Length: 464
Image (cartoon, rainbow, N blue to C red):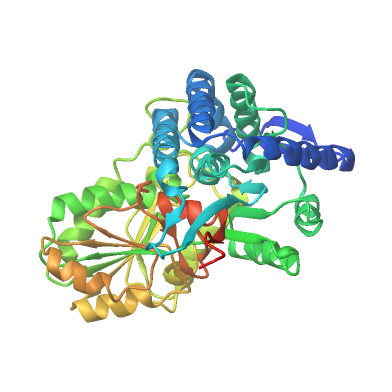
């Protein structure tokens, strides 16, 4: 029997295993979703909102179990677990709250003898393929808006966070969702691709790697379904000469190393004006050294393990390659005693003397390492920030909002921040460019990708 297995990065123990869904179970789930969606789409937005709020309430009621469970599954320290659920609630409540207006018909200027308007119709069945790194936050981006738009949802969560998918199912059942409206399935990669090919779904929302995104696109080719892809990132920060230095250091260290650097929109490369460079690096390194690496179930821990040893070894390889090419490492791994090659635990690292010829400045690291480069002008910063195949977010650190507007207009990215980073505001469209993917979640624009327009052109007077 093939198993869906979560191996805990905390101690390499098998935390949970589930059998993959049978072909019959998948077919039954699709049929149940179709049946549930036919009735669900007829419900008012207000009635959908009542059940979706109950779903959020049910999830939050499990917080005491979810926080340590999440630490065991993917390694994030328990001290940060409540933050993910706060973000889950913020995004869900916001999207529920704007649904009525976002889904309202578009009315046009009056034309004598005619009635013309555009409605937003649900797509049908949405497949959400969610990742492990922020397993509640990333899934809710599509699950709740899809439901509010009148769709049914099939959820396929990552093996590393298979218990999160089950929590979604528990919350849906506790909230009283109609049978089949939200169904969590344990699927293999091949089963997921087959489900996309089979015409059993009408849209797939995927968050994950670029290579996996290409597999999703190939599977969807010719199926004429909508595809939303949030893929990798190599997000830059630019610290201008007029930046609030202590503030920038504090926030960029957090942006680089929160969740052990395992964030699509985490800071992976920093460009600092030459007038601040030395002071910035000194302060950045000093603050990084205060992190406490250890068991994520210990409330004192601020840096847990990476999701698996293979991921840690990849980042170690990037660091070694950069040092061999002339980069300087500012953190001695020996000062983080749990850092052991071949394990999921690795120390954070700060590199200077880096260049875009190095993998650590070009390829997604998804780990606790950041490269810092000295630059001399806005133009140089813009050129380097855009020199990437990714484009999810970019942050500017400056006291000059007008300068930030000028720079933002030239950046090839989905989101531009000023004096903040690594955050999703649900009122803003979450999107990317280049290899970061396509499509939009959150904001009113997110509903446009979960619906299709239907035009109504009524001639009211046939005798005129």
